[in-house]
Length: 357
Image (cartoon, rainbow, N blue to C red; front, side, top):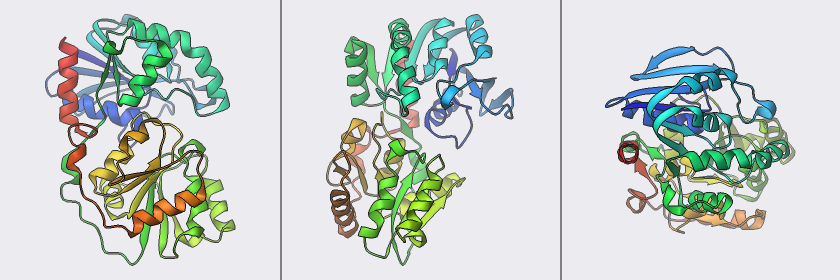
């Protein structure tokens, strides 16, 4: 099959999110199919055309007011002329997915990564105006992929979709990466956060809760974003700056080791469609604490993953983190395999079956 994947992000290793999802499925599909990726490039510094892992990648400059929605005239013109057997577009919250409906193809598939809301006031205004366009795209799609049951329910309710049109295929992991991970011996205990440093992700609560935890507990934060300066300043104000460590630009193996070494992984996000970082933490056999909302609630089993209520109350958060830190570490990964956690090869097999229908 000639397959086009449309990605709103640069299609670059380490860029996370949707880009990581598209990269992982594309390079595996390329072993058996002719795969092209149309991506965007906000910097203009990445190669316009290149072949990566057998995938033909084309990048187009984008316009992003408020760092949102990623519109590209070049991509629009390219998609109007595109002809493929399958067009698979990703990311409801950006224009490239919706522009992809213009391409000529036998099968039009979308993976929405739909949150049900945007993350800033400006984006929320655009999000509401966007609904008619979004509805047209989803109605035109031959199949809609959600990465969790929560996302499927949200899509069906918000757009009044027939549930039979929405297929749940979770994000994947390269499970071989986790096979030989071993915890390092350290003279401290650590809380780990991995992700964007934005307020909706809830990382600020981890700074606030740290003074309430034993002095041998440190906070390790992996990622970057607009909240970093505030987090550093707040850590100083609370006299815990010497217990907070920031990391950015880690290699893949360095990140995996962070997961394995952590005593607890915490994500207090307001909304998630799946959460690949929680899946990675569980695959590294690290217990997690998450908010009891959105798709994060699907991870909570009170054995490997524990929940806290929203809005966040520091007393409850302190109690739950202490409980996990002092508990015997559970390593029951098998319960998630094949349901919430799939190997990327299984994800691709499911996609090929969907494309061929």
